[in-house]
Length: 395
Ligand SMILES: *Cc1c(COP(=O)(O)O)cnc(C)c1O
Image 1 (cartoon, rainbow, N blue to C red):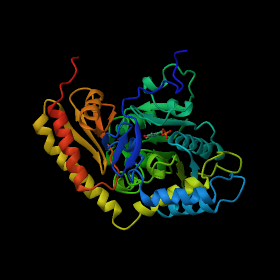
Image 2: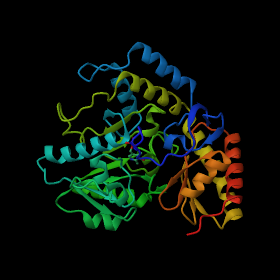
Image 3: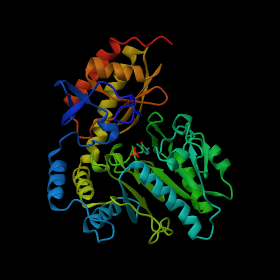
Image 4: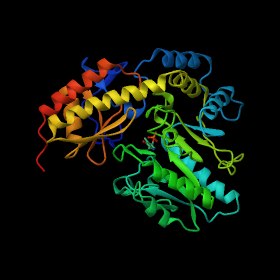
């Protein structure tokens, strides 16, 4: 037997964390890492945040799980809070991002089928999109590396270049249900959409009764400096998938929708055994307690600007390696002149700094949202030392 007990689908690195303290991870041998990856935009309050930890501990001792067969005071309260703070009128809770996107896809299709137009079932999605790893969500991207070997995939998706409004409009036909798009592409390389692109999608949706679905699994929950990124574009979706940071490390997600867009999601059309259980709801409430506090979003924006400014200053000193910075709030990327994976590994193994590689030669910088100036300084020191000691692999 040579297969590992953990199914070997990840190229796992030598960092083996056993403990976390705020913005730091501690490995098996006691080594410390500055964690500017945050479990890929998940641990938005850092590790071991006292308010989140206590909420989970207290709820676990009170009531962990029942079933969606019963009334849910905890789910009603968190859904109401999301509704009060967003475009949405209704929320379905899931356990992951892919499930939130799946629910969003079903909601979009059900909108048209319940309106007497079942032929309007195609969603237009975008190059380099990442929507998850289920069969439905890998069908919703044209990235070959995610799809290869898993045919037959789900029909019902068309693909256009990201941020190209005319190309997207050209694909609209009588079978189009709407658009599924990340306002800021994450895995694709921290690429914020332009405002006219998202506005143009909104306009055609209004004209032709299509649905606009935003995948804010990575860019949502205060990451960009507003509860959801769409707020900064002034473009509201009809349906939105949220996850990653929403539980601060507790696995959960949510599909938010307007009353109109959710018209097809009636009793019996969807479900989840765990989705929205009291323990998840306690985690979600604790995260919102912190991020909705007065001044928190302003702090994220200000911290993001300081970090980005500091990164910008590094660029000219290492212009053989760095091309520029991109992103919004604390969802930042450094674009390299060569593949980012080897540099991310170098920062991790030789300079104790955790970041995440993304498409388009980008190093993703996704720190906890509550970091302080000392963490920024430390990140810049490690990055700068890392850039100085780095030789890109021969290509
Ligand atoms: C991570 C991610 C997903 C998938 O979330 P999972 O929790 O891994 O299923 C979907 N969409 C986007 C934009 C993501 O970044």
